[in-house]
Amino acid sequence: MTGGLRDHTDIDAIVLSQLIGDNHISEGGWRFLEAPLIRAMSNADYPVSEATSSRVTETLVTAGCSENLSLARSALLVLMTLSETNQIDMKPFLTQRRRQKLLNNYKALLNSMDVQGQAAFESQINLEGSKLR
Image: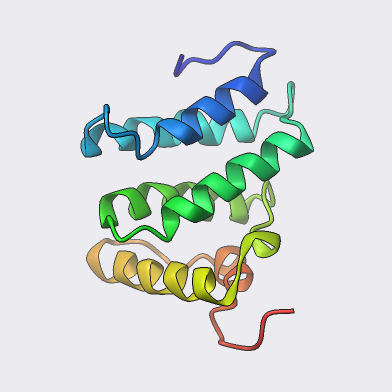
C-alpha cells in the first residue's frame, strides 16, 4: 500500500490519512505513513480529486488538533509539507478553536524538534493572530 497504485491516488491518500492515528498501528508506525501520503497528495501524474483533497485535509486538520502529540506531530508534518507546495488549503477547515489548537501543537512541535518555520503553513493557520475570514 505504501508504494501506491499509480492510478489510485485518491484511494491511497484517503486510506493513508485515515491510518495516521489508527489505534491498530503503533504511534511510531504513523511516521512511516507520512511520506507515502505526501507522495499520493503530490502525485502530478495522477492528481487526487478535489473531493479527496478536501477529505484528507479535514482528516489531517482534525488529527493535528489532537491532544495526542504523536498524532498531532504526524498530521502537522504532512500539513506543513503539503502547504509549502500549495497542495492543500486548510483555511476552509479551520474554526477559531481548531486554529488555536493547531497553533499550540505547531508551537510544541517547533520547540520539541528541529523544524524550521513553514511560511505557507503559518499563513494558513494565521500565526500572526489576525481574525479568520
